[in-house]
Each structure stands twice: as C-alpha cells, then as structure tokens.
Image (tube, rainbow, N blue to C red):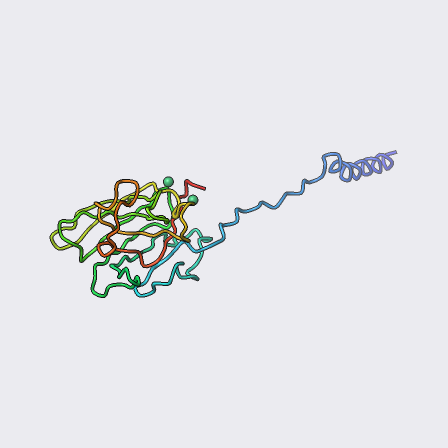
Length: 209
Ligand SMILES: [Ca+2]
Ligand SMILES: [Ca+2]
C-alpha cells in the first residue's frame, strides 16, 4: 500500500512538472529589443580650406555620427572678395571666416572679416537664388572698425539652409553692404564691395523636418 502511494505521488509529481508549464503558457519568447539604429548618413563635420573653390561638400570620411562620442558639430567657411568677371578670389583682398554649427535648433555662428572699408556697415546674409534673394536670411550686421575689421556673432532661427525655394544645391553666405539690403531682399548689386562664400554650405535646423 505504501509502495503504491509512493508510485502515485511520483507519478503526480512528474505530471505536474510536465503539465504546469504548458498550462502557464510556457516561457514567453522574449523579442530581441531593437536598438535605435543611429542616423546613417553624412558626417556632421565639415571644414573648408582656402583655395578649393569647387568643393561643395565637406570632406568625406571623417567619421559619422553613429557613435555618440563627440564628433564635431562645428564647421568653418571662408568668404572672399571676388572678381565679378570670373568669380576668382582677389589676391590680397578682403576676406572673412565664419565658424558655425552644422545642426541645432538655431544657426549659431561667429564671423570675423578683415580688409573692409572702415566705418561702413555690412550685413552677413544667407542668399538664396534667384535674384533678388526672396527668403534670404539676415544673420547680423556690424560696422567695420577703423582697421577695416568686422565682427558679427549670433544665434539665428533660420530653419534649414538652403531653403526649399533656393535654386542652388547649398546655401550661399555673403557679406554685403547693409545699404544694399532692405531687410528682406537685395536692392542693389555692388559685388566688388562684398565677400562671397568659397563654397556652399548646409545647415540642419533640428526643429524643422
Ligand atoms: Ca530652429
Ligand atoms: Ca531640419
């Protein structure tokens, strides 16, 4: 009798081991969590070098943004006095350099220029083609000091650059005479008095799709 009970208990125990997991639904297969794949694409870093007038894109192969660890969001753009007959850079002419962020909620920049006309007020703009630049963005204005230097810095909510209506593949950045600009578009054309970008740039406003 005792032996029969032991057999029965053992059988019940085995049954319980085999059946209970089935009743409970078995262990749920855990779905592999999908990690957020990093934004593939162009490296968010650029640098512009003197003498390469044809370059439109920042140099490739400087690393993507997939790694969170500190890729630079800072780029530099040179502006030069140019000869309007062939758009070559005027040797020894006025020039400037803009340091800016490639992406962010605002276009943050610092611009310094040299060799300009003392006492004249200049405006730094994003100029979209075609003329007269409908939709252009004023980045800031300043008067050239006695040494012909201009400093303009700012944080401007420009939206993405270039704008959709721009016929250029990238954004043109110019330093123009403030008197040739009426607050929304160009009103005169005195290119020998301006500084022109050495290549087109792109800026991603992260608040704008
Ligand atoms: Ca913005
Ligand atoms: Ca954007």
